[in-house]
Structures are given as structure tokens and as C-alpha cells.
Image 1 (spheres, rainbow, N blue to C red):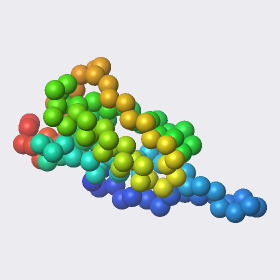
Image 2 (image 1 turned 90 degrees about the vertical axis):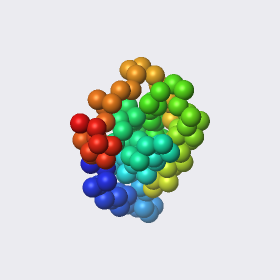
Image 3 (image 1 turned 180 degrees about the vertical axis):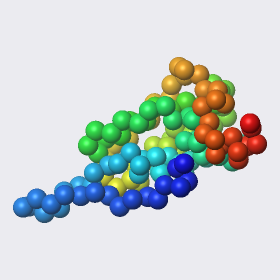
Amino acid sequence: MADDMARTEPVTTWTPEGETAPLVSEENVIAAISTVYDPEIPVNIFELGLIYAIEIEGGAVKVEMTLTAPACPSAQELPEAVRLAVGTVPGVSEVEVETVWDPPWDPSRMSDEARLALNMF
């Protein structure tokens, strides 16, 4: 799904004073998150179902995510990678990434594309 999404141009508006900051779209945030991969799994974390919520308010973006397991070796790296990726989206001024454990992740959260890539049917 996210691999098929083309990153769209940011939407801006014009005022008498000039162009305003780009509006942050969920599609662009998802496209940015989709560039982050778990180093042990060849599927991006969005398709793995690790992203539980994306909230956008102006230029502030909050992402709630989980990991495949509490003892995940990438527990420190993945949230920071998401923060950095989302921060590259035009119009984003602030990024908060929260790791949550409820509900726990399980393979049923993966997209069909992730299941196909991992040969899990």
C-alpha cells in the first residue's frame, strides 16, 4: 500500500503577505514512515503494522508505535528513525514518537504486502 503511494507535493495557501507553510498530509507522513525498516525484517514498519496512530495538528505530528517484542534489539533505534523520517516531511515543525505496548503487536497486524514479502500466509 505505502509503496504504491507517490509522495505528493505539499499543499500551501497564499495570503496577501505571501505563501503560508505547507500543510502536513497523512499520506506524506506515511510515506516517510514507510522508509523505516526493522533491520532484522525486510519490510517497512508501516506495512508490519507497528504504527498504531498518527495525529497531525498544524505542523506538529505525534506517532504512536509499537515494536514486534518488548526485548526488540532495535527498541532505541526505530522510534528515533521514525522521528527523523517524519521530520523531513515539508511543513512538519515538531515530531513526537511514543512507543506503546497496548495492544501488543502480533502478525495479524501486518498488511497483505508484508505477509507476501515474508511468505507468511
